[in-house]
Image 1: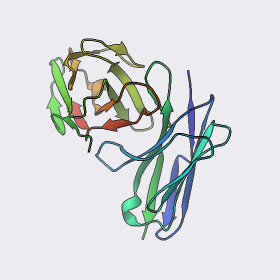
Image 2 (image 1 turned 135 degrees about the vertical axis):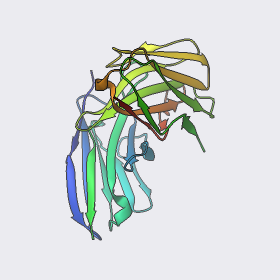
Image 3 (image 1 turned 45 degrees about the vertical axis):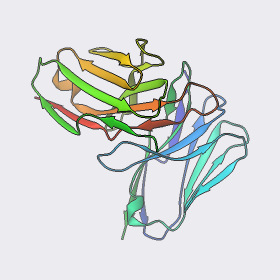
Length: 110
Length: 114
């Protein structure tokens, strides 16, 4: 089945720094989704991308749908303490399922 | 806003008990999902349903069953709870498969089996 490789697995950054993470797929996707999960909570949808080359922003977050349709990037600018959490990429897999990346654990140091 | 509500945030059950985890969504979504989440293993799909009374196995269905008698409600059943089923359980829902496939999650149920 389809697999998503998400990197990095974890990041430790200083408050105010920019963050970048990415996902690559073994096959073409027609949608890319980015979620954030706060500790002890369910994932929350941050950004949805539907078109190759699309660049979409949500506040300090920017995500891009790769031209090859096999990758996507999420950038966070000027990180703040509440950015802490796990970030997941996801895309439509087979048989009506979403396929998820393994997640990037983000820690923001004061 | 889409709302997916799981009946419990925390549960503690004994080995061998039958456990019900309930999930309700208020957006008339066709698809509903149950995942479990364990450190280092990411989100793993247990079962999903694309219509009332329909169900499909996910990646790790063993030891679980599901029920969908009404469109808005999807239940996960642990027939005989075991300690290796201690985990975070997440319910999600989405529209019928197509261009917009965003899934929306509940707040999660942290289940401990002792």
